[in-house]
Length: 350
Ligand code: C5P
Image (cartoon, rainbow, N blue to C red; front, side, top):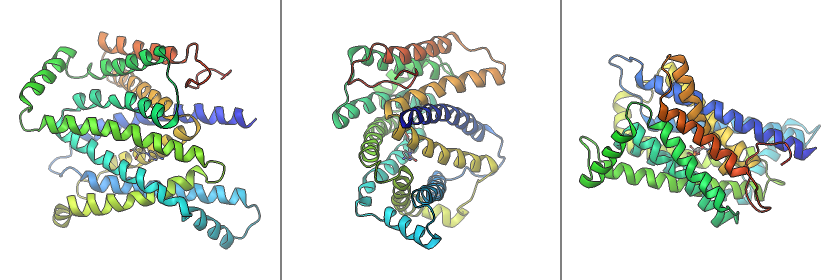
């Protein structure tokens, strides 16, 4: 029965991630393109901090709920003591590493987006699919068959195909990339810097998710997932506040204010991002990082299809081929697994 429950949490969390990611992509697209008049664009550092605050509060509520369930009948003050002990446990310092790395990753993503166009960024960021598998092999001792490697390369290519079906064609993209590599720059942005940032963000994504997965799974019997998340968000607050908000944007915030450029869509984006972080945590704990990345890839296909449907534009040939390749990769990854191999939770028997 616990296995059955685990399987359903696994599937549910992955499905939720697909849904959340798809909606987030569309809301962010809207927040970028909606006419805001003369209002300045909101500062990313303030949003990053608020996402951590929301995640911290939500994780605290969920951790308190867990504590109440494991101590039935205990008084509120006893529960608070238990909760405090589990959060400030001697091993909580282990979360300093992923907290610092995730904060670094978030600012690298921001640097990459500022220096590359959105499509080049999205396509290149798919590299994290491969870095995650690499770190899963190195740090978690997982094994990947040649067939699965093929499936991962197909997945990366399929997502890239869907991505470049947007405003520019694959030929445009290739031309852009070669001219960029030759000259090192494209007008007004520092493309070399953007590329380095996105490669570094892909490496941090793989490393941090795998580190978090190992930490959570090694201690799941004694420390709840939500306690781990409280610790993670708590330690993330410091770099988000001191490095992002104060050091990076302090002067601007002093001039225009913390909430300059905020609109309901920005708040919705913050809420969805915080929710995404919580769903990612469940996916990592109950499934694994590779499954999480498959879900994220699928959401790119879903959001492309939804956008095409909503705006009445027929999907391009590239996008349709890309979607087919993504689906093929998912089934190829799971076909004939060996006993130590990773599998995606697709079918009931596993
Ligand atoms: O791109 P990637 O899948 O690596 O992004 C993971 C995101 O999920 C990060 O922005 C990170 O802050 C968030 N996360 C979280 N809580 C976790 C694990 C990841 O909020 N336990």
